Amino acid sequence: MKIATPIVGSSFMYLYAARDLGFFKNHGIDAQIVAIAPANAVAALQSGDLDYAAVVGSIIRSALKGIPERAVSIAANRPNFGIVGGKGLTTLDQLQGKVIAVDNPGSTSFVMLTELMKVKGMAGKYQTVHANSDETRLLLVTNGQAQGAILDTSNALRMQHDGFALLARPIDFPEAPFSGMGAAQAGLQKNRDLMKAGLQASLEGVEAMRSRKSDVVPLMVKTLNLTADQAGDVYDQLRDSWTMNGRPSQAAIDFELKNDFETLELKEMPKPEQVFDFSLLDELGKK
Image 1 (tube, rainbow, N blue to C red):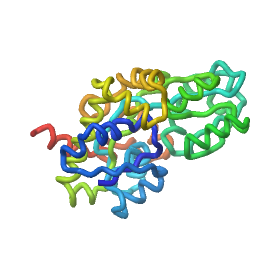
Image 2: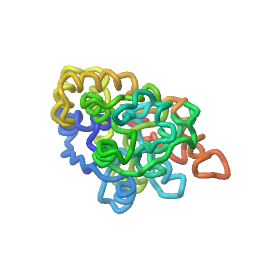
Image 3: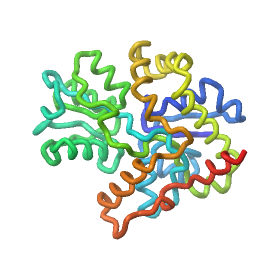
């Protein structure tokens, strides 16, 4: 089974936990986890080159544009982002009038940055430079081309360790469906048993992120190149954001649909069934 993530980051650590703790293997699956840009992952699901992609924000927005894909589970109810400031900055409001490095418009990080800055009264009061990887955004901040960047929490904490200020943490962002598994509708029907087994393994990975800190932190050290203290901090920051059963909270669903309605300038408010397909979760729940 081939699964895509947009980056190697703590947002997707449940998949690496499912692989390294043997959950995929226990379900008869040889899981290959690869980092692919969200737009490319959406296309690869359609071509059959991927089975799952953990880019549910992009999949949801693609589904609303008519692409036959659905989010089949949600791993977290809050985005796993941090915002770091360049040297000399200590608070988020100091980014007013400054340049912030973020992924491309339409990406989850762009949506979350936009929403946070709106809540903080800074809508339209900053500029953005677009880069689709944390590594590139980090470079833009360190060389002074950007004064802030939105990053995976693990990378934000690493930057903080290097002397940069952490201006926002995951708890500062609104509830929204984040990470999880998305698939092409054709793949869900054609390979249903395989897809169900893969989904079950991923759910076990999410549960490990909630309840098996002593097992997961060493994996985070290895996978994310963190110190044990940094990995423990990331684990604690994210523990309460993981979903219990693969389903998003109502607040997360409401935010997603309202944001998509406004951002995509849809004629009517989208319905959950246009973007979510939890039938595999239903079938797993009946076992």
